[in-house]
Image (tube, rainbow, N blue to C red):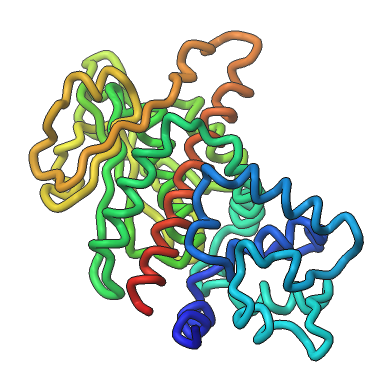
Length: 324
């Protein structure tokens, strides 16, 4: 069990908000941080929260009995005081100690946003569970401390969902200390980085600026501007609409996420991909120019964001287990 703690103390774990997030939320993050591997699965998140809420109804401290289903007793006792209880202050200290350096470099608004999304894994669609497992397995199997592991998020026009997938994936990887997992985007019929996608990403703290340059147009009548997308100190990429096999994307050894039905159907095989998974999300484009446009883009952003945060949380736990 000592290697388990040493690995955690190296900075691969959990969540802590800059302000008091409440005892229940901190307890949830504590279980995610120190619990057995299965606590990182989205499929048990609702059950975990229900049992934890019941256990905490009596007050603001954790006992071994409260978390016995998730945290090994020897781990709990290494963190608890002589009274064999973890108080609010001890909980805060334990969480603060575990924040990875990369998370500290995130834009503050994005860090707070990701903190929040990690409390919403119960909202992930069950139809995504199998693909999430495949992707987290692939990341854990292929990840190394040095070198870069690549994932391409793919849809048809590379204007909305695929760019949301790439952007939220990079946030998730950075949040969990796996910033050498890099997410990219691509499409089958490029169009442009949609202004609504830009707006919904800026809303949560991404810094997106035009470079003044234009990429090759998919539609001769539609400008295809290039943008820098930044999410933290020294963390940025160039984003524009392109095919998934554009020279700016990795050409081999990558994982491909198909986030729309059309791309999933049109690309039964993606040359160079070592993993291909379907992770379909509804297209917010259907709501363009309507009353709910802004809310629906935010809804899709959050759906994709919480899903990829859960993938990276699980990948990190599997990497941790591999290191024990």
